[in-house]
Image (cartoon, rainbow, N blue to C red):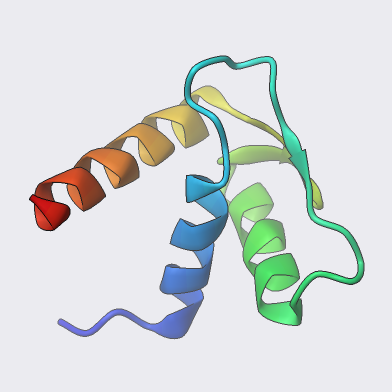
Length: 77
């Protein structure tokens, strides 16, 4: 099953979050690539982050980011 570019963009945004603390968010600025801004908005709509332009991971988002990092770690091994 091929991954659509939209999912790849959402994964890219999730991987930018730090998993070491829940008190560190991020802001996707207006000069960021349009694909990343759109991916950030979709993650907000899915309930994975708490702001349309980034903010903090929700509990669900933290779990998703953790699983994403684990999968990448396995694939890179």
